[in-house]
Image 1 (cartoon, rainbow, N blue to C red):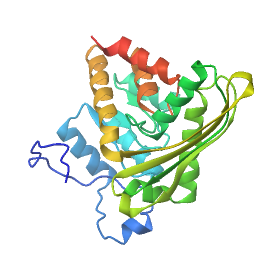
Image 2 (cartoon, helix red, strand yellow):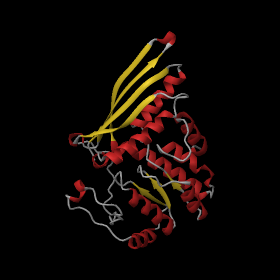
Image 3 (cartoon, rainbow, N blue to C red):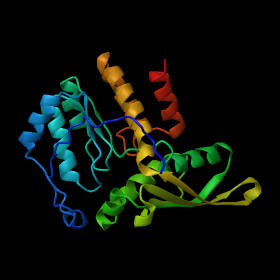
Length: 274
């Protein structure tokens, strides 16, 4: 067994959270659900006094994600939405910023996951003068979040967000589909992404790319969360919220202000690397 972290976190207190959506049937059958009222959660949040509330619950629990963002605002802490639920709007940004807080999101883009890799490939091919004609990305995973994504409504929402995130990298439209297609329990925390692209090179010559990428879903996202929270803490300390959009563009698939992947990495480094 590979151990990614050897630090002892045995003194951490696990407390129940909010549940404002119908419990998915496959979770309900396990008998592991315990939740508290909104007021009880806000009270516990105020007692712990965090700088940030990080929302990393399962996909599709939109009402619950919304309640968590409201709880963060009521408790006086900033909010980081790693889920695909839409929580960051002009209205919510203004509400948080009025209190000197920030809301970051939506839909975490992993350090070297399917979307980041796909965007990087399109950026590279475009900059080398290759014109992409068609592309798809199919993801298969074995964790709880992938299982939740199998609900068609959730799958379609995540597919749309991924496809839009990828499409920004080319200066022209092309036929593209990206999204989770299957849950395979035997993969555990692994995620396998399959890519296919058809493009045109010099004198219209055909180029095809067909490959796969396998990563650990959980650890692949942690680096981005840590870097983003460190950057966010820095600008909160400086009381300068003008760089919030830079963090969201760097860390998420569906920010309010999108940037090309090369641009968002450079903007993040220029703003926060000392």
